[in-house]
Structure formats: structure tokens, C-alpha cells
Image (tube, rainbow, N blue to C red; front, side):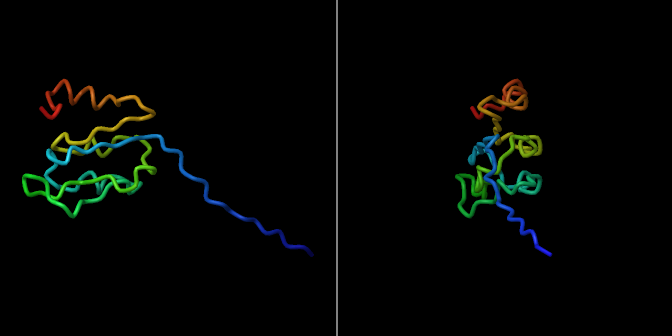
Length: 101
């Protein structure tokens, strides 16, 4: 009897999304970090000018562009793009005046 050996190789994840965090707007609540199932985000050890530890992107290659982090952010500090196109949430943010200015 012969045994078949199957080798499973981990294929690199296709980067589908891009996350940008405005560290100065972020108050460090951590909702985005808790929401991200892909562990793209983490809380930073550094402080922003307001004295908060903002969220930061630690594994950008794992982002799928789902934008759950942006939906959860009460400070409207997260911008998510997918395949180079802004998500609908970015347009809503601009309509609410949350452009960071």
C-alpha cells in the first residue's frame, strides 16, 4: 500500500483593500481593532497630539476592504478603499462634513 502525501502551501493573500487612519482624529476607543477579523489594525503605543493612543495599520496586506472598521469608528477617522476606489462610506463621511478639516 502506498501513502499519498499532500503538501499544503500557504498562498499569499491578495491585497484587496487599503486602510488609512487619521491618527489625530482617533480617540483610541479600539472599536475598529475589535471589529477587524483579519487583524489588520492594532492600537499604537505612541500618543497623538491629544494624548490618545490611536489605532494603526499593522498588517495592510491582510485587508479585504470590507470597511467594517470605518463603519464602527465614532470619530470618522478611518478611510477604506478597495481596489483603488473609495468605498461608499467615504462619500457618506464627506457628506457629513467628516473630511478632517
